[in-house]
Image (cartoon, rainbow, N blue to C red):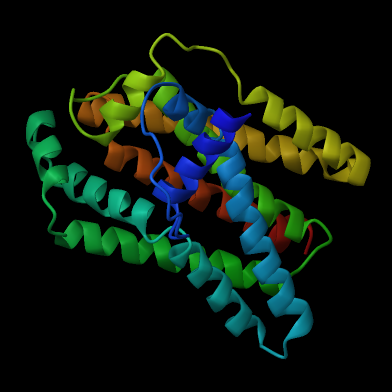
Length: 264
């Protein structure tokens, strides 16, 4: 259990802006445990988003616009913009229309180009729109699925790390990839089973929403993995970050559509 806890702390230290003032081992079994607890990290983040959302909505006089803005802002601040950086780098590289080798070189450039800037503006604007519309059309299931949303996106990141080859032998993506070599078990299924049981106990009418989120996540994995292989020859650290942002955008859009067209 200690190794699992250290792996989870590694995730908080690396993937969030929450300070963990302790030197943690970043190798071997500890790194494997961190990858196996990606969905737990997502659930932890989702719980923070949901709690912030609930407190603002239920206990403040703020308008829907203000609530949406602060929830939107929390999704940026909690991660420290780490995944957004990957999204911008990947966008700059892909829209350069260069060959794979040149694209990988562009992703390593610390400067942000026009395509990266435009892509992140579109991403954040769309996410804000979805959150605002969700706030104005609250349903009984809203808080729960806001909490579950990062769990699914982190699971997609883990699937990509498990099943997509690395584009290069150096860098953060390759470092994480080496730690899971030989592991091909679907160990995230246990997390989904527990969430499924919780929803059954809470409200069986929400089961279709859970399976819809799962379906969108699986589709995101296949689309993203194919995109990485065709455009870059495999995964990199920046592409992993971009995959989280892309999956979360798809899930926010799904939740928005459920509120706006189905449940509205």
